[in-house]
Length: 462
Image 1: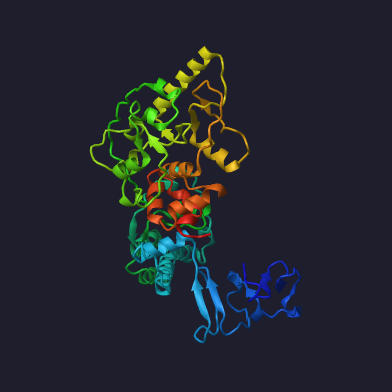
Image 2: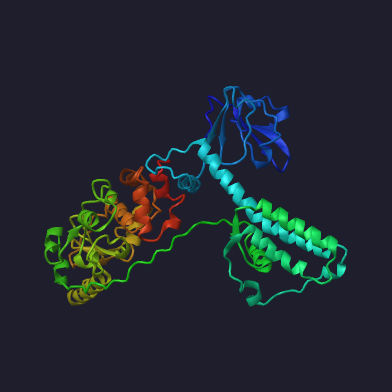
């Protein structure tokens, strides 16, 4: 939001009216040429088409905000300044391209220009084969209307059979020109034009490589996707390991457990802090960096899903689904087998007691997704959906605390958080991008991180 004390309004270009408009704070909007509001006293917005040729008379100390695109300040070296702004994903690409230290994350204008120039070169090189293809078609059909008609190719094997590998631009263009030069009806003038085109393409693409493939398959790709963005993707496959046989414990102890101490020995519990500190990497995930809730515990069956002699367990963690909520506010993460056993035991116990009360002073078994929904919605219902009481005693349990839900969400690789959770999420994760990327990555949710609540928090964006 622009500062009303500094700016008297906003000046922008209305594409429907094809006019520069002036919008005052009190709501009056009229063409700039007839408005008492001068552009030097307004917050001026330049879209892509108006970044050049818009003769705006700005103040000598004006500051331009450039969102990685074109911009124009006529007195840039006489007091006016320029700030470069990019989204989180664009900024990360600039950091990776320039090998900037992720801890500092200071991006200079020179590094931005180097990244932009690299993209410009790549886009230009990718256009050379297409330029050569169109030029060869023009040369081959010039003065020969009988060659204009081309066979329609619909067979998939002819469209996509050719593999695509990186080759020199000159090799790709020479391969495209070969059928034209081998035409028996070609005359000397056409052959000279083809040779000149090949020489120019080879010169413009000197030292550069492009993906080869027949022109038909490339044309199909252009029809399906007009703008192609290439991203380097590293595929990792987790090593094959054997699962750890689960050990049954005295599940009936959980039916009337009132505190975490009741289950500590029977279920062989370990705290979430201990599990993260001993089993996950990097060390930044430990409690010394992230304030994991001290009310979260897990069973040995949940923690050790596979037989892995050496840490880390990042790629072998169980998903966080079912957990026990105890009257003292602590929660216990369960494996699927344990959840099924407790559910069956609770149902049998309720049948014997003939009092299936939904709320109890004993523990409840909850699902993480519904527990978070209940906390964020604040609909006033006493318990989340799909909750299962393990006790026959009729009394309500306290709700799951916010720090517990945020801890479970982070362990599960979640990136979306409600307004009621974001404030606490900031205490957990502000400025800790590497930790956030590791937590999200071990659940393979990297694509969900950009522009999410977690992404805004780690970038300290309010």
